[in-house]
Length: 190
Image (cartoon, rainbow, N blue to C red):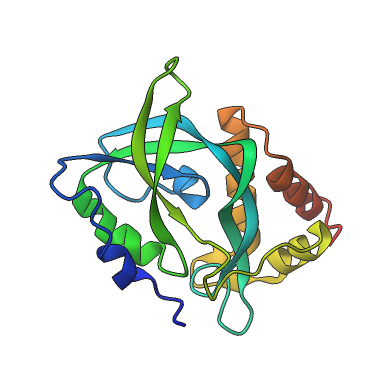
């Protein structure tokens, strides 16, 4: 199985014919929006939690020493906060390349944090447990140690984690998993 999901994502044409769509970001897409967007709004999705269970062989690690980056894991009753971007469909092509390491586009229902009961259908990049780069659950100390040691073409893995923690803090979002990992790195307990 290949790690590159670019081709698979380009076959997912749910939003063909639309002039715009919503994209939900829950990891680096919150703090590194290096793509054109028409609108940006804080949002959340139901039934998912953010976890550092996805390997990064292409950005925050290497094939020999993968880093760990965020993915979503199903958890009934949970809420995952992030950022929603209104984008043109052609913006998905470069995002497919950015998110190629095991992430597939999936359809989700977004709920906007800045408007009561406002929601929309959107797309999210999700790296499930059936992709070759999925590392899965591990003790927090082990995850933090791997993040502290990993570095790839996009920089230090610790920067990814700490930038995400800062962005969530700026949004006023509590995320026990992310903040526990960030605290371990800040305290150099790993």
